[in-house]
Length: 515
Image (cartoon, rainbow, N blue to C red; front, side):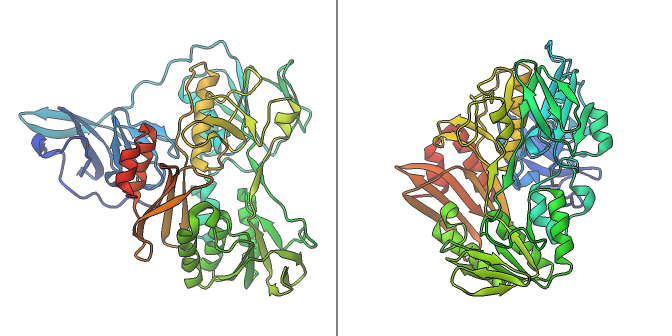
C-alpha cells in the first residue's frame, strides 16, 4: 500500500488564474497540509483530495472521465461533485472542498461538509441475506446501506475472519510488507455501525426458495425477502499422492496466508505448483522473504495462455532475475516428506509446497436451490438468477456481455466488488445493468501489470513501447477488434483503454496501441 506524501504544487488557498486551468485535466496543488485536485469543466471548478482512498494512489496522474476522476493504480473512480467512491476497489469517499471563483481567479476556501445521508430506499423489503464474505458479499452489504436500505442485512461467511482485501494476500501481506490492520475492509466496529450482522465461520447447509430461508450449520434459520449469492470460488486441489500433507498449502483466505507465512518461517526452499498470477505472486513474496523458490508448471511459458508469449517470457525473466527456478513443461506426480517428484522423474527438495493451479466456482448452494447453472450461476444483465428475488455476484456469476464474448464469468477482485454493488442496487429495484469493463492488476516485485478487457483467444498481439525497458502496452485483437489491453508502467494507457472500451471506441484503442 502506498502512503500520501507532503502536498506539493500551488497553494489553492491563495488562488490560481481560471485561465490557467485546462479543461477536464486535473491540476494538483494543496490547501493547507492537504493535497487537492482541481478540475475545470466549462466555467465550473471542482476540488477534491488528490489521494485515492483505496491505496493512496496519486489521482493527479489519473484520468478525468465526465464528472469523475479515476485512480491510475487500480482504477477506482470518484465523483468530482461529492467525492463518493463511484467504482471499486475504493469503497470510501475522498474529501471535497469549497471553491470560490471571483474575478478570474479560483480559490479553495475550505472543506466541504458531507452531503446528507440517503433517504431510506423506497422498498417494502424487510431483510436481505448475503451468502459469502468475499469482495462481492462485502460490497453488496455496504451498498445496501449506502443506498439507504433500513431493513436487516445479514452476511453469512464460511471464513472466520472479517472480509479482507484479498489481492493483498498474495502480494504485500505474504511478502511481509503489509500491516495486519490494512487487511480487513472494515473493522468489527465499522460493520456494527453500518448495521450489518456478520455470521462468520458459518456454512449454509440448506435453503428454500418457497419458504425463503437459509439454514446454517448451527441450526439457525434466517428468513429473507431477497437473497444474494456471493459464494465465490475454491482452489483446485491436487489429486496426487502426498497432496494432503501438512506441507502443502493453497492460498484463498487470510487464514491460508497466515499458514503459509508460518510455514515459510521454518522453510529454506519452496515449490510453487502452477505459474498462474496467484502462483507467481506467491513466488515473488516468498523470494522477498528469503526462500529459494521453484515454480513447476505444464506450460512452455508462464501465463502464455492469458498474456501471450512476449509478456509471458518477460514475466519469466523478472522472476528468474530474482532467483526463481522454473521447471516448465512438467507436472508434480508425488509429494513426499522432503519435496516434490516431477513428471520427468526428477525431484525438487522443499519444506513448503504452495499450489496455484486455479479455482472453481462454489456452486453447491445454487444447485441446491435449483438455479440455472452453466459453468457458473447464470444471471441476466441485472445479476438476477433464474429465481426471482435471488441474485448472484462475484466469481460464481456468469453474466451477458456482448463486448467481450457474449457470456462472461471473471475471477477479478474489482469485478466482484462492482457486481456486489450492482446486485445490491437491483435488490432495491433500481434495475441497473452490469456494464463494468473487466480489470485486474498483478504485481511482480517492483513491476505492476494492469489488464483491462477480456479475451480468451486472439489472432494478433500488437506491442507499443518496450518490455525490456519496462514501458509497454500490448493490445490483444481478434478479427480486427481490440478485446484487451495489458500495460507495464503505462497506467494512463490502461485508464484510457478502459474508458475507450466503455464507449466502444475502437479508433481510440487503435491509437493507444497501433496495429
